[in-house]
Length: 441
Image (cartoon, rainbow, N blue to C red; front, top):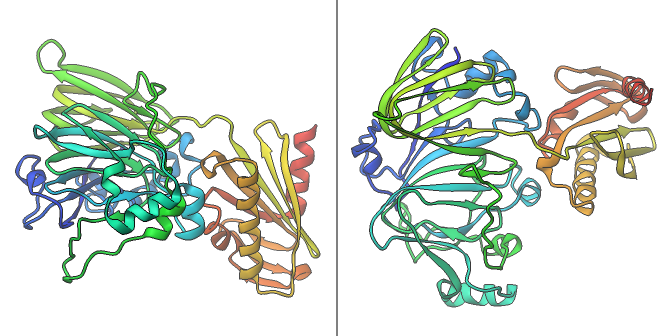
């Protein structure tokens, strides 16, 4: 199936309203509907499929059954599904918060960081949100203002209206204000550090947790400098590219597009009604619907009236690869660009007397440190290859038997991806030696 209509997961956070059910047709009977996760493979809220042979299955189950090629070649650099798309109804102010970058989040949370963008679907007159600082402040001042509840004095309050878009890079302090309806496209992460929460209490009657120490470590304490580098897109970065589509149903009532092998296409309907056809399949859409077209689906046609956000994943230029050779005495690590040029390398003792988990943790942390020294972000990494002398289950990434380092049945791939969330290949080091020689020919 190339054309999927999705069923979202719902969140009842205390600051939410009920407009997503009342105005966007979300089938939800609770009192508060703060968020609907429209395109999600995140375990905290997976979206499900509403039509076809995969009806009732999660989107992740569909991808596992059909193969990762449905995501497209540009997604090969990601360990899992790259993005999460949601609707947000803020009846009350959200907490002042910040998201970490990939490096910090992987080290401290075991998952990706979070860069996101907001598209304002609706906002009452006078609505605003917080977006960065008015001026540069020191970490000491930041900490002191949090303690004294004066942080809002130095935050940049931005009035917003329907149609505005903001890009929130990881490390940017921010908060959605009350009476705003938003479509959010973000990295596939649920890591948030709360800095200030207006003294509110959760369902348990206790004040919600703050994450001051972590927020101090990751926040960029400078004003936001707006950039036009996304043009002509609504938003464009290494994690997602977002474009706006408008059909008025009169002068413009039909548009045709193509889904190539490079990326899937997500279509989020902000308004309107009509049909989408791809191949022999036709699906009706309405305001609030979310649709997924797998990579390689070919030509599709949207007919009717609509405001929609179309999200794809673009190619990431300047990718690097990680090479790791685990030897009896030493482990060698190298960073190589796409032209096979060695950018940096390091050798560390293998310390085979330690447990495999300790050795693998040391390797993972060393790689992360080497990348940080070189200023290479995790999203610039296309993948990693790990060589070990011994018998390897290549499919599972398991070292079955490696006498040199006394390993048996060690899930090397699974353990190492906790530190390096990229496509990873584990093989006998003789195979990698042959491949390396071939690259030099």
